[in-house]
Figure 1 (tube, rainbow, N blue to C red):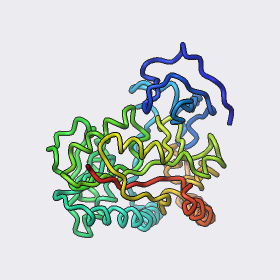
Figure 2 (figure 1 turned 135 degrees about the vertical axis):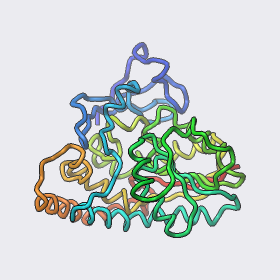
Figure 3 (figure 1 turned 180 degrees about the vertical axis):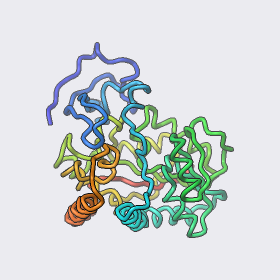
Length: 327
């Protein structure tokens, strides 16, 4: 990684540190879209010299950012053999998230359903619904919301959390898995969640952990940076400070995700093998070749598992998941 100062005169008000408002920053490295190849442009990842928050600089406009999100960015299972195996695998590893969230549901006295923000195709919500939980989804993508309704049979709406037509205090738990790092204003979403939660409601948030061993190992090639879609790159202290400033008290922290940590490391090693990346890029593959590549990727993921367990045990896992209680 390279570090260099960024002249203050090139910083717009929109590019001030979202955590502390400082204009002082240094460039860590330059990166491009390794996973989906939506652009050949390179972007800077910088660090605030005051609070050490990492972010993309300068931030792209909304129109530019929209170009970096390909169609079917979220997961939707197909009907061929490879897709069915991918769907089986996702159900298996999502059990880790389901168990974490169910503990949050059981730990609150709040009434109301669970709202999953950034629900994608709704598979996570379907797994919770199958366990008898009342659920609802919200996603910025209309196609994702349609898939949640039509394929996974869970209620979902299209929109942003800060402008969603939802009643304050209506939810017992709100979940955001890999949402905050994509936002211009993460604090706005956390504040909106605080308003929508009932008294003693719980917020569950997961983001990539920029203080992980994987980041130190891979640098700009770390999957958790995901240039240019991740606008903010959180460390544990950044995430905790954000939710506490918005009226929450952190009650649990978890540094391992069976779905994300091993697979994320495998993608950092070989983005070309990532199944979703291949699908989005439209890589021409026969059914047999697709199965073979999926098998190699799965084998690489298994090989990464021991390392990701060790780094998580040392509180340096590639994701950080927290449960926070509404004060």
